[in-house]
Amino acid sequence: MNNMKIKKLVLSGLFAAIICVTTMFPHLPVGVNGGYVHIGDTFIYLAASLLSPAYAVAASAIGSGLADLFVAPIYILPTVIIKSFMALMFTAKGSKLLCKHNVLAIVFAGIICTVGYYIAEVVLAGNFISPLLSTLQGLIQPLASGIIYVIIASVIDKKKGFLSST
Image (cartoon, rainbow, N blue to C red):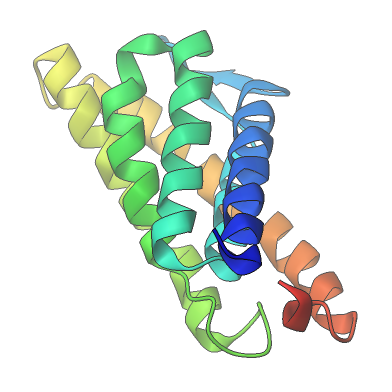
């Protein structure tokens, strides 16, 4: 195995661990169905902005799926699917993390997250009405994760040469 592939695997594993931990701790419970708000999505956005799509999807799915295994197991399957699609919105191409594409990706990832979990909760609840409350409360997460991503990405972008080493 060559050094670049090893580096990508290590970074993917590191991001999966960070995503898992930041999804689990700290988290703010939302609604009555076991949902919660966390900053793990920030690190999904960062992984997807630094890694190729396959590695970013793997890190996102594994990290988020493990977090749900420990915190909300009923959501593992929807989470793996939703977080994978969220990661696909971002690009690692270019010299900056905070490019127009990735700023728009925050919006699209937020829509995927909100709509995806609404659909999952409709299936779990068996109706279209009761999941609306938690969906509205769940809008906080994509907004908070997006703001934190913008802050971290702008700091990383200011550090010259960081992206050339990843």
